Length: 261
Ligand SMILES: [Zn+2]
Image (cartoon, rainbow, N blue to C red; front, side, top):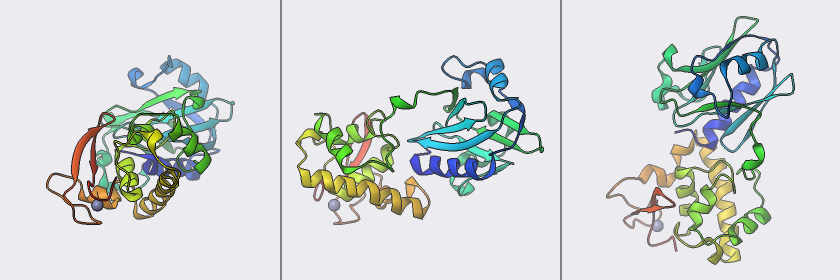
């Protein structure tokens, strides 16, 4: 499933390959894939004759600026991938959606030069919207400052994992990354957030930065040390303790009962 690191790779591909190319055709074969009132005719008239001028990202939402001033919002959902000129970002072997089936092209454009951009999504859980409300999302996880994290943590009694996974508080962290971050920080995912000491919040902040940097370099959110050890009967890569499997914040959560306190 695409998390912030995979979405960032898709954004970088759009930024490198799709800008300043005039859009001559808009493919919107699946009206259900268009969200927040957007219709195929509306998205066609918003994009035809225009070009993309920048590809930005906030959390897991890709924001493509259009020459008209509009903003195209792309959600990759559980299995979405971005293709430019039939080429996808990242390692194709890691994704079930690698197979080139045109029926999975939920949305796309053709450029005047004959190239294309498509959003391919076998499970159809992604979405396209126009002028998305960026402010409904918290600060992007890559840009999160320690002061911002302190304010977010101090405001909630919910389990710390639920708080850092809440996209309106911090944009971009999904289930796998949150488990990896809390494992690196040595913090129990079920601890009420507002009970964390200052030193623990600092550790959490460092773990967010380290996880994004290290896993980004390794190739994605599935490459974490804890993630590789996920599953029943497995052990903490740090101290060998049997891992604990629970539901925290509504999601399956792995943690170490020994060093995560
Ligand atoms: Zn451990």
